[in-house]
Image 1 (tube, rainbow, N blue to C red):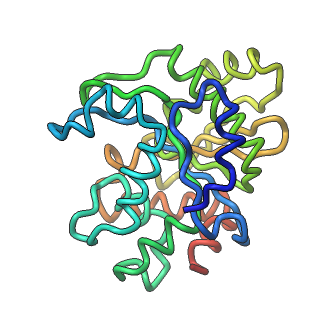
Image 2 (image 1 turned 180 degrees about the vertical axis):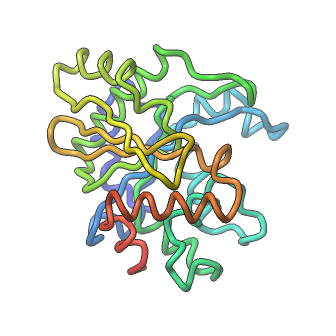
Length: 236
């Protein structure tokens, strides 16, 4: 885990959880920031309670991503497992135990919504999404990724983006839907922030990408729209 950006992250008032930065992110041939939507406080573990999660700035990187990188493959939850499957379909090392660490240490990861949800059915408010996007955009200015991939396409909507960029007095490209003959539901969303960082969104890996056919279809969609991303994950 790379902590060299921590001092800069601490200056972002809207940022509750410090993003995960993989050890190899800075030297990567393609710098990719993966963006989750939200965190849920639904476990009976006291360390996973609403108050514990919200008061722990290291929660996302220590208790989520670090675990994904190091836990046994059979214990990996659907969100990180499906994320890896969608992005690494062509990588022959995908199912190797050591590959998890290589994958997560090759990317950066953060969440949009910076407050835990108290119930699995709770959805973030518009204000939570707006404040979260403001935090995210400030993170982009620090990490300078080549691509930003939202794992879940709810937050990458004009109604939220416009409110966030208006507060920051920056510009963005209005969100576009990428039509496809292969994927009929939840088309690819694309945009950009400040005319510099490409933003893309695919369906939530835990909710939509639930079978091998859908994972392959969305892998191909990403490859069609942005082959550099797939090329990078093939190189790991």
